[in-house]
Length: 160
Length: 172
Image (cartoon, rainbow over all chains, first blue to last red; front, side, top):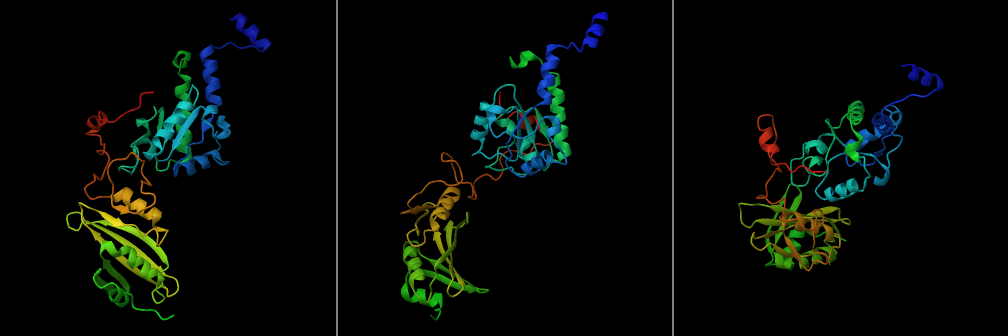
């Protein structure tokens, strides 16, 4: 106890390595630009000035999968788009997370037909599902906060 | 140029190819035999009194339990005389082939590809007969009446586990 107070006076704190790594990953999680349909409008408005996403470290949506951590699948995925989605997911470097935004990405939404994939979890493993048609920006932010809570529980060995 | 009555002009020029003609609420529909559709379209486009120089649309219909099963509809429009015309071709279900009108109206190219993709009606003489909306290796024609309507059983609380075991989840 004396040692930590002495270190604190010198401006040094000690944490577990996992906590530090998870703190860094949650505070600057870069989303990938994957707005497919109407949910993309709500994602854009969440990114804009009123419901600001850059206060969570998501300053802008990276178009390149090589530079992003979080894939927000916003909108319905058609059967023709499904291999493209999988390829972009494979091109993302680890650690990576997927947030399925809206009803169409979570379960197919109102489109129960031959053309729409009934939930993007048929293609990529999803961490958080955000319901809504489209979900309000507050709901998307709640989903992102829930993802942050999950990331804080992770271990380094998960991604090793 | 004076406008001719399309029904009379076509029945005078193609007596045996015109199977039926009617006017309902200002819309003229003429049923044409499928072998003559290209000549009828060219006649409609080139004759000065008819001058249907704009192809608005080519659509297809599936009248499934009835025979003839398929209908292909050509909606023509004359900019000079400001009027529309509908040409209808009826096709049997076991041999849905019709000559393509791409050489008369180049705008029919993609519309005919769409009808082939979704209904399965083939257009002979088409320069690029392949699927346009669905992936190239898709089997079946979705807008036919005997194609299943929904993709999967709707998942409520009472049958959640039953539907869940058949869903193909991604494994990493």
